[in-house]
Structure formats: structure tokens, C-alpha cells
Length: 330
Image (cartoon, rainbow, N blue to C red; front, side, top):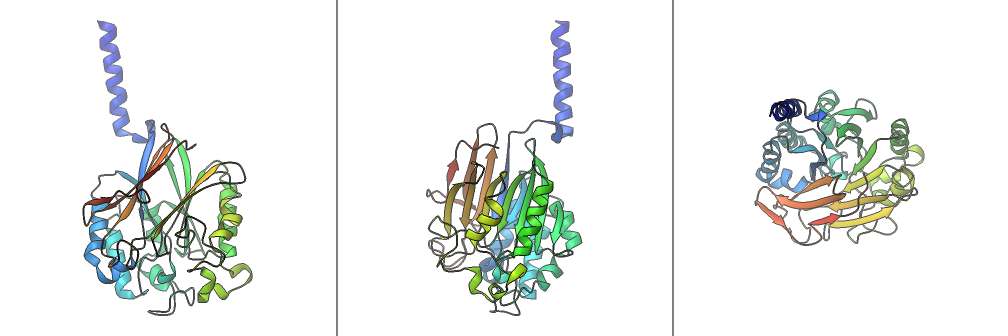
């Protein structure tokens, strides 16, 4: 009886310790949110956008982080960036977030999407010092900007690097990312960028629409030259053995795509396109507010994907919007 009592007390102490210091407990799974292009919401339906952010903020630490795949705004305007910042501010101190800048988040003025790599408004409304504080960022590029960022997380007994990369990542940006990965050889890698996959479940390259090379920033050469999905795979994703997932938006049509490819080390890389903005099939008006919920379960070896709208309080159940990757090695 005394032995049972001692065992109970010991287990109780361990349980209390686990609650007080979650990082000391073994966690087998975690969830995070992927925010597809919010440009339509910020421009025309700000209530939908704010509902998304309020819902995330009210999930009581459910999510480890939030990734925005880019095109935060439609017109790279001061008004739209103010709305974007107001939404993300709801997450401050609650859920870390990492933002990739899309072609609509840069340029010389409204309607001049990515004619130049002008990100003044993004960096004004998300000052790098504050962004680092709210995103667990350990490095940015160019320095003192949020144009490209790398965050570090410790989750499910693993260390992770999460890269949020600019529209059409430049050669010098890829070099920066590769150098960071080389310094963290045992970290798992997630790549978050705006233009990477096409809506036919292949990489965005070749003669596809929406290529970064077809925009003004795509005319640069040398270290400033942009890279499409195929080039990003060859230069950054394929060579690095620990790359697990890649997320992107940008492309219309069905707005979705899924691809599993083996990298040069024989490991699977899980790549996803999600875009629910205006003119995407099934959400033509673009006021739906759908986002992606990703769950990584290390013990079960699965990555599950759900598509949910806090605005509609509804899930998209079709196979291209709700699916599971099995036999995932993490």
C-alpha cells in the first residue's frame, strides 16, 4: 500500500512538472496554420480576414506557429498593410507567425505588381525588430528587412528551421538559406514561399503561367536573378536532406496542388499549393476565408491537412482539400 502511495505521489509530481514545463514533456504531434493569399480579404473583405486572425488567436496555444504564403495585400498600399498589421497584431504574444512576401506585396505602386522589389510598406508595418520578437526569427535577408526570414522552433523533440522566402527567391537569397542550413545540419526544414507549385500538381516552371520571370523583378540577372519552382527545387530543396515540407500560393485555377518528391538523399518532401482568393475555382468571389490546418504526428508517421474557414465555420472535404500523407519519417 505504501509503495502504491509513493508511486501515485511520484506520478502526480511528474504530471505537475509536465504542465508547468511543457518543453520537458515528450510531445508526439503539433499543429500549425498555413494562411493562403489574403489579398482579396484585405482589399475587399477585411471582416473575413479579421475573423481568420481572431480565430487563430483564440485557439489557446493550439498552434505552434502560423505561415503566410504571401500576397498579404492586393495593391501593396498603406491602407491594406494597416489592415494586415491589425490582424497579425492579434497573434502577438500568443502564436508566432512567419510571412513570405508575394508579388502583390512589392512594387512601385497599386497595379504594378513586382515591377520592382520595393517592400517599403511591408517593412514599415512589420519592423524587423518587432517581427523578430513575434516570429522566433534568428536571421533575415537582406539584413534589417523581413523580405526573407528564418525562424527556429523546438517541437516534438526536434529542432526546425522555417524559411519564409520572397516572391521569386533570388540567387543570393538561396545562397543565404543554404548557408544557414549548412550551419544547422540536424534541423528539420520547412520552406514557405509564394510561387513554387502549379495547379496541376507539378512545380511552377517551364511554360507555366505566373512565373516570377514574367514580372519586372524577373529581368534581373546574376545574384539578383529570380528562381521559379523548378529552380528552387534544384538549388535549395533537393540538395538538403532534412527538407520536410514546402508551402506556396500565388497560382489561380483550382488554386490547389499536392506533390511528394524524393530528394537527392532519398527522403520524401511534401509540397503543397493552397490559394482561395478571388477567381479561384470554387471560391470565385474570394470571400470564403479558408485556411489550412497542418498536423504533424511523429508517432503515427503522418502529416494531415484540413481546409477550414473560420468565417463560414466550415471545412472543405474534397480530397484535394483534405488529405493525409502516410509513412512520414521525421
